Amino acid sequence: MSSLPPLLSSEPSSTLSSVIKGPALLPIIQADTPHEAVAIAKALADGGVGSVEVVLRTRQALAAITAIRTALPDLLVGAGTVLSATDANACKAAGAQFLVSPASTAKLLEAMLASGLPFVPGVATPSEIAMAQEYGLREVKFFPAHLSGGIEMLKALSGVFQQMKFCPTGGIGQHNLAEFLALPNVFVAGGSWLTPASMVQTQQWSQITALAAAATAIARQIKTAA
Ligand code: 3PG
Image 1 (cartoon, rainbow, N blue to C red):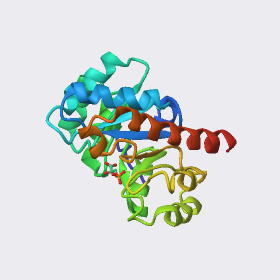
Image 2: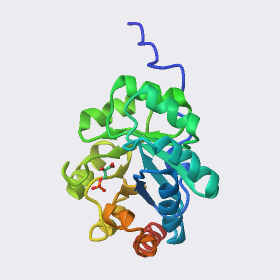
Image 3: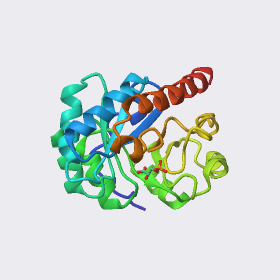
């Protein structure tokens, strides 16, 4: 019986876990202007955050990525809500250093692989994880984490997918961050709880810094102890 051809000629480049900077946190930045994005990113960095995900949910998201890269060169800046090859290419051109998607389709995985950037596709089921594995991936985003079974689901998946590491996102906050990060198959936790829209709208940058510092303390304690 002849063996199947490889799915792709390209191999996944470096993993997200190998490039992530700072504590095991991936806060989401959703900004209406590049100026606002830089202010949010600076507030997070002042709280100890080293990596951020700018979501493609505003018209200025790509410009925001470029602006943060320029203003805060020590921060690792990725793009989130990547849903097409067009998105992936535009994010790379804007300076994104990694890609995050809420979903997994063959087209999307191939587009993100072709970008050459580290990336995590979104999964919520065993079949989606198996597809990511078939593409050679060892890291995925578990989304929406809380609604998809949360901690208990990640524990159940750990026995079957022993090589796979997860970035849970969706429903994570200060109240459950420690529990998620304590799981051996979780390498980073993502979400919007460090950048509430209400604080962004009222420019409460020191409040965002305080939220980031509290999360950084938890992340450093858990992942350093692990
Ligand atoms: C995402 O974009 O990954 C999620 O919308 C984040 O979910 P959260 O707002 O519950 O953190």
